[in-house]
Amino acid sequence: MIENLAKWVGSHSPAASDNVILWSAADCERERKEHERTEIRQREELARLRALLRQKEDLIEQQDLARKESEHRLLNDLQVVKSLLALQGRASGNAVVVSQLAVAASRVVTIERIHRRLHSYDGAQRIASKRYLDDLCRDFSTLFCEDQTRQQVISVEGIEAELPAVTGISLGFIVNELITNAIKYGNGRIMVSLEPHTGGGYALSVSNDGQALQEGFEPAASKGLGMKIVRSFVEKIDGELRVGLGDNGQGTRFTVLFQ
Image (cartoon, rainbow, N blue to C red; front, side):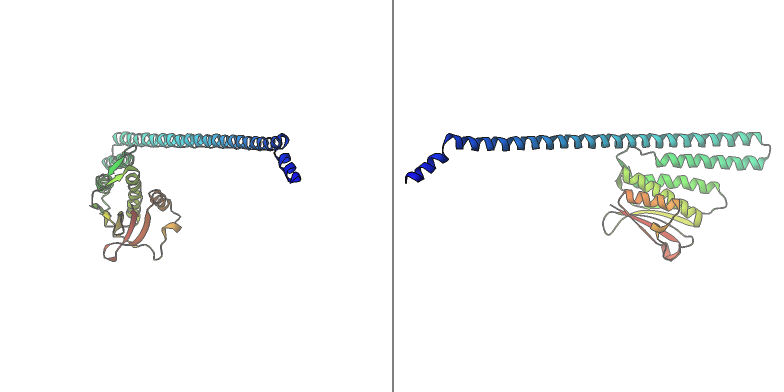
């Protein structure tokens, strides 16, 4: 019993208690230093991410400024071309030449109007889609009226839908490219339609009565700039691009499904 009592006293002596306290303090100090190192790393990482975010914001701002400057220069160039055509027409004594230059100047004005139309909703929150498409297609129709060799008509059908501006503007650029392709390769009527889709969301389609595309045509494999632009804007709105035959199995129909 005396031996057991001695062991108990030894284990509860001040020296033993001091050892326990010293060990706990050292452990806490290590934890504190590790916490400080972790906090420093987190601050450094946060500073790095903030710097990257600032760089990205600066790059976006620079790209937006460059885009606006490019658009401004384009519009100015169109104005210059229109003025030069008008001057040339006034200087010419040939009635036929004057008439042809007047038609060319009118086309330049229409192209300028289409360009302005595509960017008219920059900064807007929502777009009345059918009205937007009606106005855009009316501008294209003006081009056709000035070309007596073409007998193409553009019509817009479907519902009026209030769409987010980002989606509506993207659809405008898609329609612009698809109508341009229909003008280049098709003939007869060009139909633009916006309808509810059975699977949810909407379906925007552009069809024409011209020659159908080759069987097995795959938009994703097309190397043409116009189709690349279409795919880019379809991806921007998380849409799906489909290609098929037009009405009555004639011509080509491009359809964009989106939410």
